[in-house]
Length: 313
Length: 313
Image (cartoon, rainbow over all chains, first blue to last red; front, side):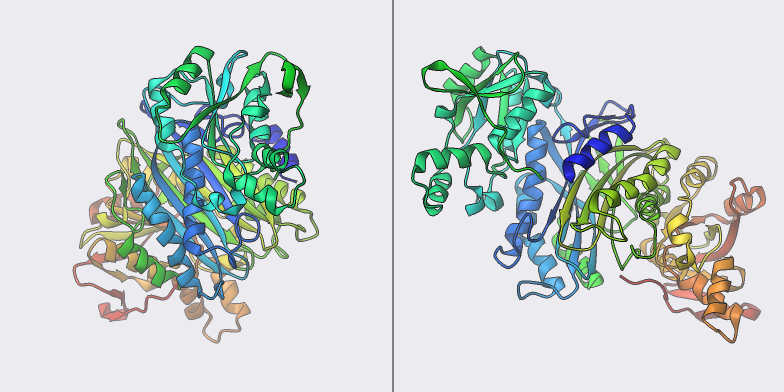
């Protein structure tokens, strides 16, 4: 129902001069009275959907909730500033912990991450109730002199490049990933990037979103997609007969990679690929084109339609 | 457990130069790179605790969630700017509505309030899950040239004044109240207020909080507390033998009044009481004193201890 509701929101939530992008990018940009622009993002995570409290340590869940927000700020090339943590805690606790122990466990995961990225935990709201664990995190960031990196800046001919490796995040990466904040800040400062998005719902779907928001189509070079070892492991665990093909499918469609997909002019993208200026590997995975739709470049250079596979909420 | 957890937070969440007040006021103040200071507040509401979905129309619940945040901004004398709405919706819906209808109902309540106070609904996150309805609202505001109105600015000798009438909010006011934004902005602009708080957990408890944060004690003039008609009605419904005493108890201790409690020097407070410059009545209800604790001025001027009754989470 989320897609239907977002459609309803687009039709019913009025535009406001102080707010930009909110419903069509990774975060909203709020213009203040002075010269500042603050970038705001919010994520709500629920037990049994975004994590499994019985299976995942509370500290990993708490870390994930903040990390997902930092990833959204990274996608806007905004420096993280502060976060607000709201909890609805099951009255009886969970996973063998009472509600207080559960709350402390969540914070023990997110506080070190906040310290690492110099994010103020500036407030929140803690409640107990008769229901599953719900975390709602809102994070504020500031754009740099280079302005925000938005989804709509891509142009036909831009190359698509991606940080890290994709797929199989359910095996652990979805909880323990590094939000690409430092990478986004450095790349946005040194190179003329056109557009960016964080891959939260799968490369195919998020590439399609970036392309559509930029008024373009996208071609993915499926043979070059960096497939993570976890995607291969997952394909093996699935008992796939063609493991490489199944692993590629995971890399294209699994949610919660939290890597960055960036669009830049070919010469800029080539410089980034040559320089490899950040710790994680950057790979060329596609191109924006004038023709709408999502495509893959098959062997022999033929362009065939690619399904927008991914994690749909 | 909330109090124990807040204690844990105070000990474990590090201070950060960009964030002020977060854990000890109605909202946090975030200093940005430029001259701006943004005020941020967040509230999480759950079904069966903050509202009853079976009993209360979704549009009233949606309105309440935003109004509670606006009340926090009012308590800081911050002009509301933008709000972010996150929902955890029961997968099967509730109160005879499916999840989509429920979400739309909530927005149909909060959108008119946002329009009335010129607040941008700038983003959010909508999810379905197997649990009760949870709403998490984060609101941003901007301080004026007069700066924020904080809890800690009260001084011994300041008079305590309150907007509106108190108690019995459970009969409807808790959902349909007017956040005192306009009142706070006007009073803070025209008069030299020292401190403010919104009464969300009862006059006695919130007066005690304001006093403590200001390093003072407080005396309440219990004979002058403006008792709402709903507090009287509730006392009658309770079958109280002494209805006025029971109604006063409601006025002192009921949660969710969302009126403003302000501290100002006596001459300023007297001017406000004489001018009555806002639509709702303003009443003199007490005084800050050097001696710690919460007290009431009994008949004959004798000062006796008053229990910090109120809504404890």
